[in-house]
View 1 (cartoon, rainbow, N blue to C red):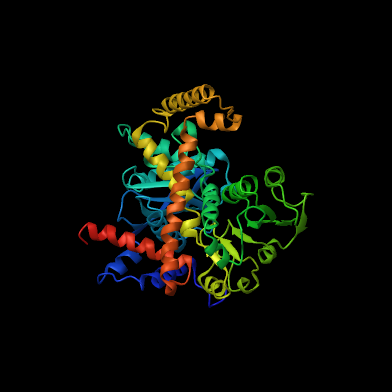
View 2 (view 1 turned 90 degrees about the vertical axis):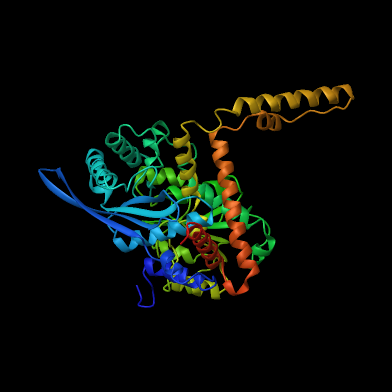
Length: 475
């Protein structure tokens, strides 16, 4: 890393300070919003493999302007306090931008999950959850974790069960974490949520011809070429939905062991399965293999979609990026210095604090579902179907009496007559959230030229909303 590069934490603070100067805040409130409220470091021992192994974990709370606070827990050897605090801050502003009523938090455990068996991981996870829960750092009304890098449904189920064992009379115990499996209090559409949110974010961007023209593009998503970095959960679902539902063409996929390129388009599902079977993309025959995969970030495409690591685009490669539009599916994939290089070159960036907010949005829906103790759609789905069927029958009757030959298509009848279930309602709520989030960010971007870019505009909207929340409390 060059000396001109800022750390991830410093990058978030830099972006915050750049946006905050456009807002007139009372003395001291800007600092209150900027700083992390608290970070808890836990070191616990687990008896395993004939001895005791000590693990180090973190849970950071950035802002409690709204409670509970929300943020994932990641498992990675690189986890450290600065990274966790940066991610917690980003969660605060992400939730505020898309109007999710949570404060920002984040957690992490310094561990490589690949080094441990499933039984060992369960013991470690339950002990970590115990250490956090006994300090209310896992609690449905105070602090609600979710999956992140290195964790998933399995780990969330263990944590929820551990909390439930410690709080046997808490009727809302399942709401202590989100991202759980369906059988453990989860919600339809949560696994795909962040990738689906990326899709909805791009669809909303392309609804504004002026914004599309600013990226030197035209038309809609159909036919646009996309290079995806990282085919994990987020990258896979984003690539799949963009190719199958939006008509975009995935021409490049970058993974840890190299990259694949094919100007005619890559089969996302086939490659995803190949990775699952072989541990990487090497050996896949449907595209040209590139050993130095990160070079493909500089490839020709309409949309670049970094969905993996922080700092993937830095001062080292920002001047060579050719994509006119970048959407940050990962957290912090563009450094602060690289952001300015790209902006000065006229490249449009749809920022992470908006673009990957789909996960926390659907986590919010899951939390609400757990607190209400009823599946979405259960009360009204059949009633909706009955009303829609009644309307179809009445229309058929009217057309028949008027001798008007009308026949509804099978596709229309199937979709219109079906009442909305949980998955449909989750997707509808997520789509609405992503639309409104972009519109709020865009309004500032377009009405205040001095703001300069969507990222600064997004931070400005978020900071103002956090400030309003604190001021409503009398601060």
